[in-house]
Amino acid sequence: MVKLYWAPHSRSVTSIWLLEEIGAPYERVLVDLRAGEQDKPEYRAINSMGKVPALVEGDAVVCEQGAICTWLGDRFPEAGLAPAIGDPLRATWLRWLFFAGNCIEPAYMQKFSGWETVKSRAAWGDPDTVYAALEKGLEHGPWICGERFTTADIMIGGGVFYGLAFGMLDKRPVFTEYAERCGARPAFIRSREIEAEALAAM
Image (cartoon, rainbow, N blue to C red; front, side):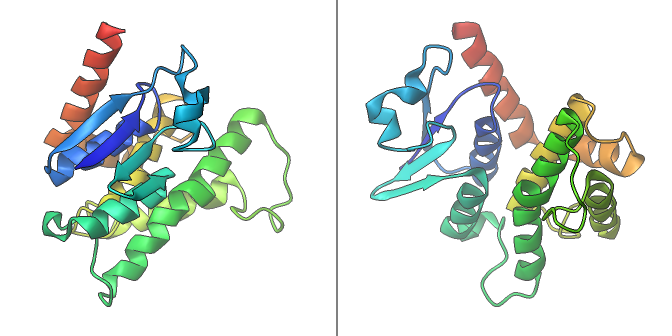
């Protein structure tokens, strides 16, 4: 069985969203970040960065949100959340999986922190370039890969929610409407319920 190490108010809630989309049994292990449990040797043995999420299945240990989305998408093909190897759509899927961490998150940090960067030297260019690319990517259907909801939407959707909530992403209709579609999914709603239940119990 899949075991997910997670904490409220962190990216790991997005992993719960993904696991709820898959629908297979899994175990949640709460890591109390306020108590410093992420720095204990037993957790550092799982993720040396001391971050959540971390996923364990048998001998496999998967850290980093994008890696978890890739692993679980391929691990549970019956859920239909990852295009198969050889499917041309997989190229688009991979592009957006990596775009979230490689472009959206650095763009948010640049905007939030007021970094000055040289556009030609920054891997993500600049926030305006990133947001324009994301807007164009969402023009082709309700989801980032068109008509099909995939784990790339878990990555991109989580990033869009965060950016809108904290004022780092412009409230353009294409972004707000996409966030509404993601937020209406039963698995997304359930992930927020799980987070709220955990917070209430802490």
